[in-house]
Amino acid sequence: MARLSFREQVLRVREDAIVTSVNRLLADKGFDLMTVDEVAADVGIAKASLYKHFPSKEALAAAAMVRLLERVLAFLDQQAARAEATAFQRLEAMIRWALALQLAGEMPTVPSQNSTLRAELMAHKTYLELLMQVSERLGAWIEQAQADGEIDPTLPPEVVLFTIYARGCDPVPAFLKGSGNFTDEQIVEWVMRICLRGLRAGA
Amino acid sequence: MARLSFREQVLRVREDAIVTSVNRLLADKGFDLMTVDEVAADVGIAKASLYKHFPSKEALAAAAMVRLLERVLAFLDQQAARAEATAFQRLEAMIRWALALQLAGEMPTVPSQNSTLRAELMAHKTYLELLMQVSERLGAWIEQAQADGEIDPTLPPEVVLFTIYARGCDPVPAFLKGSGNFTDEQIVEWVMRICLRGLRAGA
DNA sequence: GTCTATACCTAGATAGAC
DNA sequence: GTCTATCTAGGTATAGAC
Image (tube, rainbow over the protein chains, first blue to last red):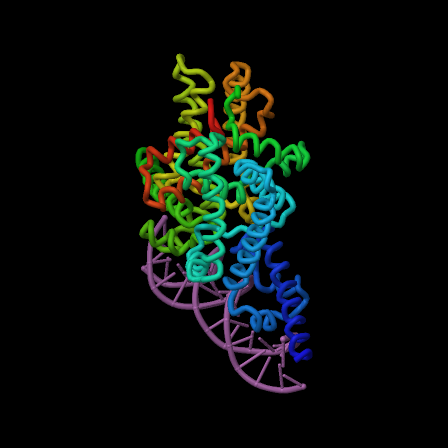
């Protein structure tokens, strides 16, 4: 079965290359403006070949989102392994990571408006399963950070969770980067600061 | 010239109805998913008639954005007339107004990604003029609020301005509304609180 | 300026040979 | 599984009559 295993490995490598292209194009232009022709051209194969791997454009996007969630989970594992870190510090690291990914142009975005894509994602078992895992683990840290008095305990955890998720598609970093006046590090620091302490003066 | 004036008035009323439909559809589905057929159907006229008023889909969106900016300027005038209010209070009112508009489903969104639309907007003199007016007036209040020690003076005004603009397309309110657990008023309060004071505990 | 009917094209998806 | 060639739907825009 070495032959078959090898073939399967080739398959995975190719599909990984596809997902990588989709990921970048999604980050670049978003779902609606990304065309399957572009994906095929970027991967370097024919469009029909793409459809042998993924049955639809939505499935392509879903695969990219699944891989994103897998990476998030891997990062969460990494943070969980930092025994000395508090829940708050772990959340902080998570947001920083998301902002860095976004500034690097590698954060795929799925418009919450598109109905066909949303429907497909909401029917995608793996995606939902991973999304729930991420939410549960972040939720636990949020509640812990609130118990520690590090995150405002009067905020519903749901509100905190959505606020953190929203950093992943925050338009501010891209705008600031576009202005050309700041380095990526400065942008991350300011967005983090505003996220954690708000616009108001005074600690 | 009473006849002509009347006709012009009719024209304006019709075009206002068109822009109202475009505004709601943009708020609902965004530019890419909004179709000109839908706009025509919503207004109750034939598609070809639409094109007598506006030369392209982009022009429709631009008209909606111009009207939004005009409303913003009217609101800024209103705030400027409140002699007793501080710059910070005026900014706060502005953000609140934007959040309410969004929750009411009347905030048109233009994806910053779409190139044809962006190009058209960046060539639209009225739009640019109004956008600059809004930015300058908000910028003045931001700097005043920083001088008053109400907004963190170590933040570049540009960063504050973009952060405020971003409240207009923040996905968090819609998500919280979709969860069904909160009233619009609660959502506005939490988003305002997080915007101004951040997630961290303690004043 | 309004309509019906239609041109034109893009982009998602497929057929069929190899 | 990969390709070339093609189908098809849907969406922007326009022609031409009234």
